[in-house]
Image (cartoon, rainbow, N blue to C red):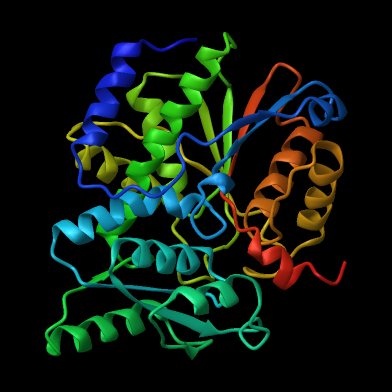
Length: 342
């Protein structure tokens, strides 16, 4: 299985045609995990290091926000709005990206169980953000963001909303991961290695959709598997059919029509006690990867995704003939907020 350089070049040319800001360190590294692969019976594991994107501790949102904020600036926005859990990686990276490009930011964190603790992502976000408007834990952040945007418009500002409920931003976030798929393919081909059979990522929507679209556009038989850190009880949850819709929307943003997304696999089996709470499986995954390969993942997103990958290998869903890339989406500040008790 291989892909022509002309096809990669065509996809990249369409990506370059979109409005974009530059602040992520790209391409990110691709690390092989030989000791862990041996431990797992020969299933070969690589880590795509999107924790190394460089913006305020890195993570997948830095890559996505290049396109999202490029669109915001092209539309004349002067303030961006995002809201999520108090330990949100997205909020942290948005506040940093907005500062880099000279936009004001409004962050809307939930007063959830981690809010009063204040460390980790929340500490970094408070250092970076122009304004924080916390909402009660039971309140829908999507509605709060819309209300803030209306208030800002009435005062003469030009807000741009990102994150859950913002379809344009979610679509552009997916577009960014088409480029990540191109990076993965080129890294393997530069090394003279066969391409991966599977790509795993911790995703509730856009990251997985972009990887899946990239595989479709490049004509590759690579299965993309999403491990979701939340289930349908969470406001931000996107079902598999919604992820398929994001694949189609991202294709349209790049000028492709009639793209068939293919089957979407988004596994909610590894959420643990709740979204935003560590699980025993994520703790075990963190310790195993740290002690076998010297790599760190977080307990809320990438740790749960890696726990899912480990379980898929251990239960025989993946085998010794499989070559798996795990896309590390970052989130490492959460280690200090939620994993510090040892």
